[in-house]
Amino acid sequence: MVSTIEWRDSKVLMLDQSRLPLEVRYVECTDYQMVAEGIKKLWIRGAPAIGIAAAMGIALGAQDIKAGSYDDFIERLELIMQTMLDTRPTAVNIKWAVGRIKKLLSEKRDESIDNIKKILIDEAKKILEEDIEINKAIGKWGAEFIKDGDTILTHCNAGSLATGGYGTATAPMLIAKEQGKRIQVIADETRPVLQGARLTAWELMQAGIPVTLITDNTAGALMKKGMIDLAIVGTDRTTRNGDVANKIGTYTVAVLCKEHNIPFYVAAPLSSIDFSMSSGDLIPIEERPPEEVTTIWGHRIAPDGVCVINMAFDVTPARYVTAFFTEKGAFRPKDIKKIMREDVDIESIRIR
Ligand SMILES: CSC[C@@H](O)[C@@H](O)C(=O)COP(=O)(O)O
Image (cartoon, rainbow, N blue to C red; front, side, top):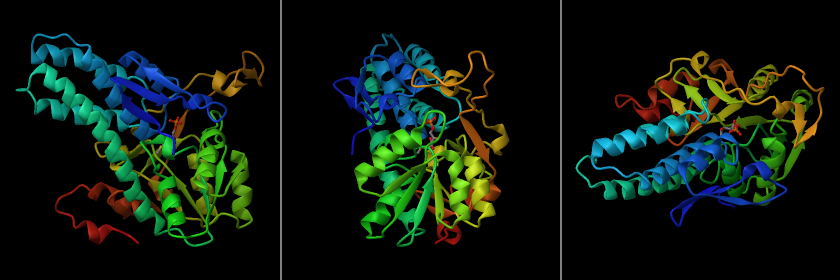
């Protein structure tokens, strides 16, 4: 498995996903601005991966701060955190990572600035390590819903490349394979950035899982022919009522699944669930440059000057979601708001 992101020799090393699968190239980020640029330009992408990148970017930026007091240090660090928050608005994972770092900092007021700088590096590495374990747990719960012989549809890339490793939507597939289940995956190519064609197909082939690539508009026809047993996708932000923001086209997949009675599952680490937001209508949706639609890798495919809508994400209402796979178990959408409550017996709301 190739590594998505690493802290190495006081720098942040990220795999440049914008060039995959034609070129496997790592970019060495030497300052936090470069990490922010990498997130914006999709060198690194996928909700958990950009959360990890933001944490590493903050740790990297912190190393260069020259401050005489804790308050002075925090004031400068706030600017770096804001730069990370401003990169991509839809995935809640950057906000989650910043929140986690702020909480940690508030507990370390009495430490020296040099120590705080080290603590920030350790925390960023910890976020990466934990992410891999979280994905394995998602995989364990999710694999229970996959039967021997199943064909699974996925959209975009919620795989190892979108995370610290193992992926969220791909984790149940990898575990099902480890359990000896014969599965195959249908990957939507995922216009316009082609994360399905470039990344999911590449990763699953490397993992030895049979994968077939389709254009996005083929999914409905395959469902009608009975060729899809279930769909598993990732999420950039799920709100507490169970609405799901994910790559544009996910909503279409969910509606098609409902029409064809196919279970539609969302793999959602807790870092992608925004418990403070009541509904998907409130999620900020990133709009990306028109060139992503009018050109393919520098080749123009649409008339010069044509108007373009390029929303990077859509929101699938909770009623289309069969269940969420999280590190705490699988849950119905109505129970998502309960999973962090201490007065709720988690086993009583888990589904199998
Ligand atoms: C585990 S990744 C979940 C989502 O982030 C993923 O499905 C997705 O939509 C990624 O979009 P991207 O624009 O490539 O960052």
